[in-house]
Each structure stands twice: as structure tokens, then as C-alpha cells.
Image 1: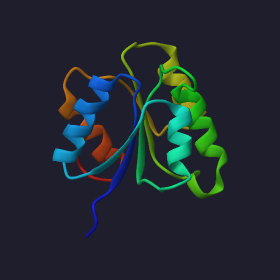
Image 2: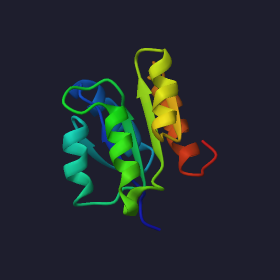
Image 3: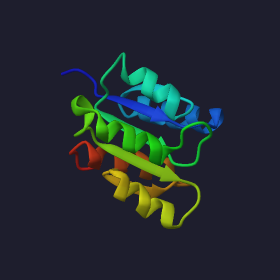
Image 4: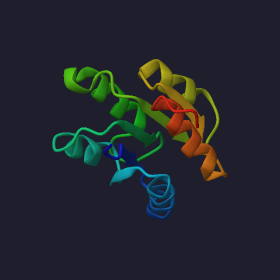
Amino acid sequence: MSRRTILLVEDHADIREAIRLLLTLEGYEVVAAEDGISAICLLRQCRPDLILTDLMMPEMDGRELIRCVRELDRLSALPIVAFSAFPGPHLEEAVRCGANAALRKPDNLPDLAAAVARALGGSG
């Protein structure tokens, strides 16, 4: 069985690398982008099994990315998990934009891995 691929979109390099490492250790293949525009470019080249995106980013934020992905026929059903370091109404807005789940960026990275597993239909 091939490894599932996750497109990780996070603008902070240290956080992006920590999450990438965690997900790789969990058995996922991880493709990373630093913002929504870079993510859209990557989506032209690959079709991940899930998008894991930060909401607060420069250029194109996570909500805009979610809207764009939902408008693409070939990706409209792709699971998307959004996260943010800031609690508040933008998490609910991410779900209204089409995210399958929106959560506060956890201090405990295994919680994020569990959310990814749930979004992919695993027990996590």
C-alpha cells in the first residue's frame, strides 16, 4: 500500500519543519508550501490525499486557499484540515469556506497527527 500524501501549508519555516517531521514519522509523505499561492502551484503537479493548512499566512491565507480548492472540480472533495494559533471566529469561517475540520494549532503535535488521521478516515 502506498503512503498517503499530505500537502502541508505553513508560512513559518520552523513550524512547517516540525509538522513535516512529525507527519513523516507517522508514515505520511509530506509536500510542503509556505503559503496558499505556493500550494496552488503544487496542486497543479500533484494530488495529495489531504491538505493541512495554516489560516494566517501572507499572500494567500488559508481561507482563500480552501475556497480555491473547493472550486476545482478535481479537488473539490479533497479533505482539508485548517489550523491557527489564534482561537476565534476565523476557525468557524474556515469550516464555512469548506474545511472538513478547523482546530487551534496544538502545542501537542501528536494531537495534530490524530486530527489528520481522523480526516483521512483513520482512528487517530
